[in-house]
Length: 375
Image (tube, rainbow, N blue to C red; front, top):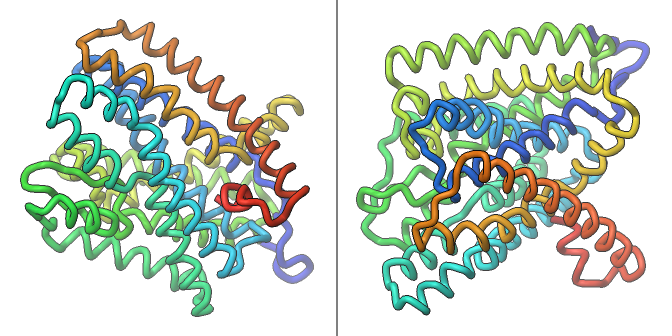
């Protein structure tokens, strides 16, 4: 499967399968967010299946693993640029928190609802989300690259951090500010509530593995065979792992709690990584039969994914939060229809913004838009 003698990196071109996997991961995130915020019945079979497979296993883990693959392939992944990009994404994450939660601030003021104001400020504004994780992960990754560590050492560091949060008790605090800070790094509970998302120690293993995997992928000459074998191994690992966790009631599948998912243990991470490489393989074979226009569209969407993710939140929450607060319940078909509309609108706007920002920064390299472009 490798040919290191005549051509060290025979597979250096654009990986359409990875692009498609990232695009689908974002689509799955948008749909599960719609189901959550529009109040879909969480006990329904559809919700449980979609949340388990597409909203959990094939969403954030796939996207974060693909982020690592992108670092292996990127020509702009030197340490300084990686750290600079991480800082920008971290800042963008908190700006997005403020923008997307404005309806809660407004409703809290209109209704004089202090509970809603507390929720808006501390849970949704100060707590980090997937952008905060991505920013911190890129900063740490850049620092490790500065130390000139090989990819297998970086993977071992990701595994070590994952093992720490697996065996060390969850940090519990009664201080909400401390909770928001520690929740960026380790699984944290505020009294009895889980107010943290994607802590660095739990999730850093995904981009680390993606980086290691991407460096192996570059050396592959028989790409179809590689994806077939590695994909099958990954799928078998995921199915066996999640079946065991469901049967013996451990991990986020068996326990079914926010803490067991966001504060993911190392065994769950390994199962999700198996599912990710299986999904990469599936997407690779799908792209081989896609028409050229769809392949090009997939690449265009992949280049604008961060902006698409940013755009979907205001579109979603400015509709969903007022409806949920005042007790309006939508049927499942209506929620899915809104989700499809949000995906289409956010994709179109994200691609348009990406092109505009790129054009403006090319015209004026010192424009403040370069920070958004870097993110």
